[in-house]
Length: 131
Image (cartoon, rainbow, N blue to C red; front, side, top):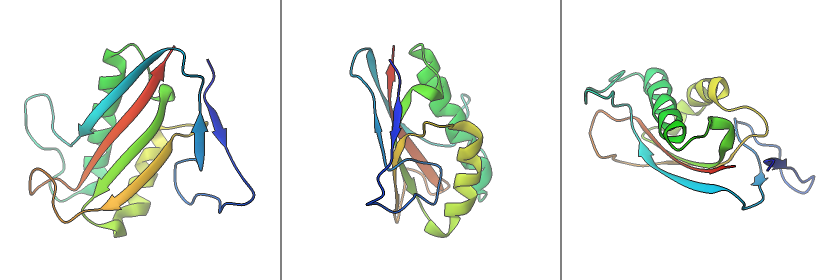
């Protein structure tokens, strides 16, 4: 079951760590990862005020959730990213590039005025298909 990154010349090339679209045969285990934040297992928040450190912790948390289902980040087909400041786009994608590799998942990033805790700068939810 291979994930495939789709591209179309009719669409602009993405300027971040994501694909225009991702396809995968729907055979396997679908895993829906809830929005992950920069909380450690002990409940403390990593990197208060530092989107790079928070993004790293969020990616680690998404990875842990997918691993608990028997998969890896390579099985992630879609991520939704909620950020407090869209100006952090480049910093976030610099970290994402360390975790997500081609074929890249499809992705949406939106700026929001608030997240569940005032110290959160980013939250990511994901969908994975595990063979």
